[in-house]
Image (cartoon, rainbow, N blue to C red):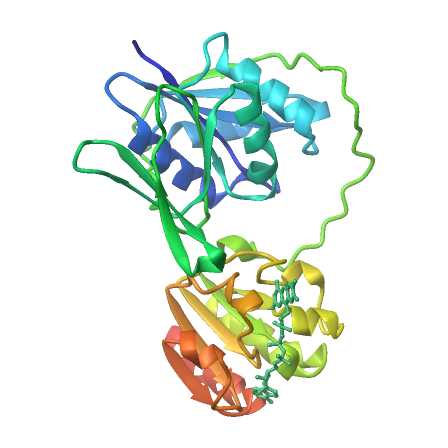
Length: 326
Ligand code: FAD
C-alpha cells in the first residue's frame, strides 16, 4: 500500500533553505515503489513558495499558511504537521537538522510513537537492502550506522551540507494542496523574535566559512576575516574564545556549544583547535588553519596549515583570491 513520506520544509526569511532539497533527497532515498513524497510548508505568507517546492521532485506540496504560524511554535507546528499527515501515520518524516527541525523532530517522534535518527550525514543501503543512516558521535570522532526496525514511522533529521540536494526539474508537476490551520489551544505565545544573524549567508549552510579565534585580538580584528569571507562568498564564524572575549556575537560561535558547520572550506584564523571547537567544524571538507604557533592543535586536523600572523596572511589571501575570482 502507498505510504506517505513527509518533508518538513525549512524556511528562512520567506525562502526555502538549501537543506530542504537535501531533505527531499533523503525522502527519495527512503521511498519505495508507490510511496508518496509530500513537502509540507508551514508558515505565514508562504503560499508563493509552493511552486518552487513542487519542482524539488515531490509528488505533492501541502501548504498550511496562517498568520499564527509566522513564528515557530512547537505546539502549533506539530499540529499543522499532524494535519498534513492525515489519519494514517506517515512512513517517514524528514527534517533539516536546524533549530526548528531539532525541536520538532522529537515531538513528532513522540506523536507517532516513532523511531528517530537525528543529525544524519549519509544514507546507504546494506547488501540485504536495509537503509543505513550514518550519524557522527563523540564530537565527530566516530560514526554510527543505524537502521529502523519493524514498521514504525521513521523520523530523520539531516545535517545541512552533507547529503546531495534533490535535483529540481521545472517540468515536474506536483499537486499543490492548501489546508486550513485549526489553531490548537496553545500554551505559549511568541511575543517577539530577536534575530541575531551572522551576515547575509546562513553560517550553517555556507560553503565557505572564515572563522576567527582569540588570535584576532579585538572586534576590529574580525574586519580582515569579513573581507576575505566577502571575496569568497562565505560566512564568518568564531571560536568561543573570540565570543567570550567580546570580539563578536555568540551567534557566530562554532563548536560543541555553538553551531555545527560542514562547509567545503573552513579557514580557521587564530584558533588553537580545542576539542570543543573541533566538534563544530571537523567534518568540513577542507580545513585551512592559520596560526602563528606551529604546535597549535588545529594543525592536526588541518589539510593545509599556514604558520604565520593572521594579520599578514588573511589580507594576502584576500588580495590573491580577489585577483583569481575577479
Ligand atoms: P585560544 O585557545 O586562546 O587560541 C588562540 C590561538 O590564536 C592560539 O593558538 C594562538 O597561537 C593564535 N594566535 C594568536 N595571535 C595570532 C596571530 N596574530 N596570528 C595567528 N594566530 C594567532 N570553544 C569553541 O570554540 N566552541 C564551543 O562550542 C565551545 N564549547 C565549549 C564547551 C565547554 C563545556 C567548554 C569547557 C569549553 C568550550 N569551548 C568551546 C572553549 C574551548 O575549550 C576553547 O577554550 C576555545 O575554543 C578557545 O578559543 P580560541 O582557539 O579562539 O582561543
